[in-house]
Amino acid sequence: MARTMSEDVLSHLGLSTTDDLVGMFKDVKFVCCGGSATRMENFAKFILKKLSSSHLKIDLPTEQNLRNICRTDRYVMYKVGPVLSISHGMGMPSMSIMLNEVIKLIRYATCTDVVFIRIGTSGGLGLAPGSVVITGEAVNYEFKPIYQLPVLGHMRSWQTTLSRDVAEAIKACALPDDGYDVVINKTMATDDFYEGQGRLDGALCDYTEEDKMDYLKEAYRNGVRNIEMESTCFASITSRANIKAAVVCVTFLDRLHGDQVTATKETVQQWQERPQQLVARYILKCLEEPQGMK
Ligand code: R2B
Ligand code: URA
Image (cartoon, rainbow, N blue to C red; front, side, top):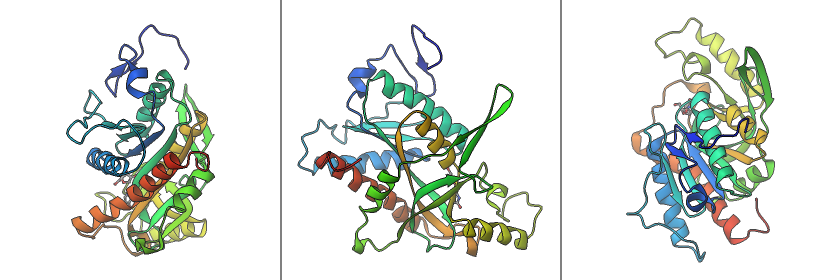
């Protein structure tokens, strides 16, 4: 951290160093994040059920006591024993603010060996909708593994390193009967959902279907299998902070066949649970066999 302060306000979380951060968070080992507040509340309830029905002796809240710890309406954050479930909103600015504050939070709380996992949604490339992509490498719009941000008037670039071990360990949690594919491949992160992802169905568009297909096919040839809006930022910030991290996203459609998510609400709901299932199994395995995992 660049400065010393008598009080540090984590303003978007609504927490500060005047709170008992050590008492509240010291046992955190997994920070799981996803774009939507409701999805992360559901993940907190889901992991609570899984941890409650395990043999592990962990101090857990009851479902009635499970509360949003954020004191602003920017993000939601739930703590379930060693797991923090937090929303990050859409896009890299929102992700970056959450990560800066949560990384400070776990440092103030003196947490050790924390793994960060983004549990997200995405558009697939050449995969059956509902497939899960674990990010092997997070790339930008030129298919390069970098995250860029202008700082003090200069464009800065950082590598987007993720933990291959964590990715493989999560993939190993897929079961033959799950009924969906899980692959480790490249994920492209963009700064927009519409033109930034080559869609034709935004309010604005000044290219053709052919231009779009040329770009998406080039992305596919470069190994990209899904497109979302946060992975390069997430990978670069966590790796600069020496935190092991992984990105696990379900795909809502195959972008080689269209732009709109036409699956029903119920189907989308079921698909969204797939990364949660895999990550919950991974967390349970880590807690049950700590020497073999992470
Ligand atoms: C996936 O879904 C959101 C856009 O719909 C965005 O946050 C992302 O990465
Ligand atoms: N999220 C994205 O960023 N893109 C998609 O196509 C679907 C979900």
